[in-house]
Length: 347
Image (cartoon, rainbow, N blue to C red; front, side, top):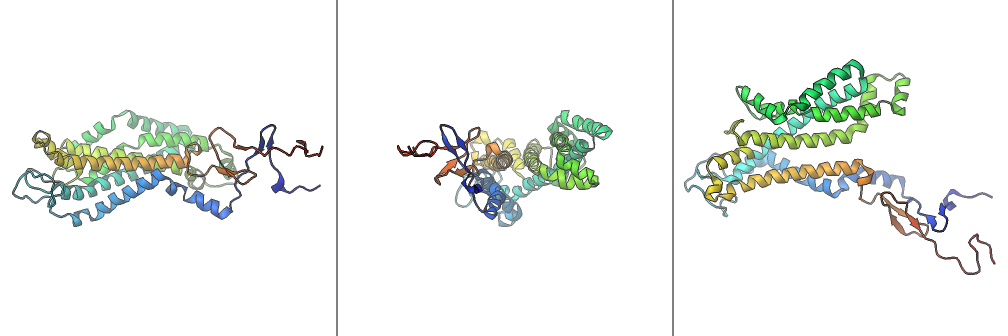
C-alpha cells in the first residue's frame, strides 16, 4: 500500500498527534525570514529613533532657530514659545545648541564604531583562523589593550595632542576600543574553522582569503553588528565625557559641551534645570535606541529569544499551536466513536 507523505502523522501514545509544521509557501517563508529583524519591535523602534538622530545630525545646524553662539540680552530664561529649551546665562538658545551638537555626537560615534569594528575583525578573525605564532602575537596585542582602562587611555592621548577635534577624538576612541570585540570574534572563529563546510572548502583548494570572506565572515555578521553597536555607545559616552571634563574643544558644540558650561555656571544651584536636562535626555534616548537595536540583533541571532511568530505551527485539525522553548506542541485528537477501537477496527 502506498502512503502519501502528507498523510503521515507522528503520534504520541496516550496524547494524540504531534503538531505538524505549517506548510507555508517557500517564497513567503523566505520573505518572512528576510524581514524578521525589521519586524522585531525593539529593533524597529531603535532604528526609527536612530534615523531621527541621523536626520538631525545632517540638517540640525541648518534648521536651528538661532545661532548657538549668538549672545542675546536677557540672561537665563526658562523654556518658552520663543526659546523651547530656554537659554543660558549669555542668552544662548539651548535648543539650537542641542541641534548643532547632534552632528558631532553622531559623527564621532559612527567613525569610532567603524574603525574599532574593522580592527576587531582583522585581528580577531586572523588570529582565530591562522593560529600558531600569528595567533599568539595578535592575542598578546589584544590582551594589552584589554587590560588598559579605555577611557583613561583616551584622556591621556587626547591631552598629549596639540589639537583635538571630532575626527581626532573618533580615531583615538576607535583605535583604543577594539580589543574586546577582537577576543569575541577570535573565539567564534576558532569554533568555525573546524566546521565541515570550512574543511570542504579547504580541501577543494579554496584560497585562505576566500574562505574567510565567503565561509567564515557571513556567519559572524550578527556578532560584528552587535560589537559595532556596543562600540558606538562607548564612543558616544566617551566623547561626551571628554567634552564635559574639558579635554576636547569647548568651542565646538556637542551635548558634553552643553553640560560643561551648565556645570561651570552652577546651573543646578540656580535652578536652571532646562540647561542640562534636555542634553541628558538626548544622551539617554540615543543610548536606549542603540540598546534596542542590540537587543533586536540578539533576538534575531538566538532562536531561544525569538518571539515574533516564527514558532507557530498547525495541528491536524488546522488549529495554530505556538511553539515554546523546551516543549513539543501536541494537539489532542477527538475521542473515537464508541463502536470504533483505538486501532481503527469496528467492534
